[in-house]
Amino acid sequence: MLGLDPPVAGFTTFAAEGHGMSFDNASVGERVRGRVQGSVNMAVLPRERAEQIVEIVCSKIAVPHMAYWIEPVLACGRMGELAARVAGTGDVSEARTSGAT
Image (cartoon, rainbow, N blue to C red):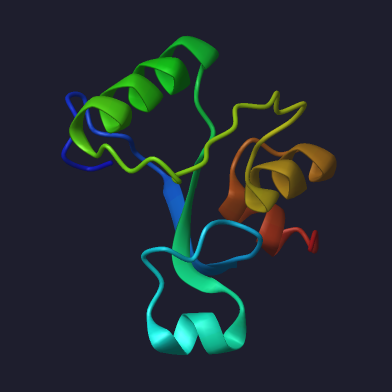
């Protein structure tokens, strides 16, 4: 995601295990466990940019079993920004010193 132009700022990755897909390319250990190792990437983006990234990944990493989904995000932010708003201050450092948590 950092290699894209423009790069995607602020995304999350974590390890995952897939269930229910074909085990044609699974290792022996994955077959014994009944799940394959994988990873998940998440980013909050405008829909058009998300669709663009899906197209780029599809053309550059042709992995037939790779799954994706695009879903709406109703709200997004940082807790420090929310705490500053709730405290009635505009600065996170002000919110901390005024006793807001």
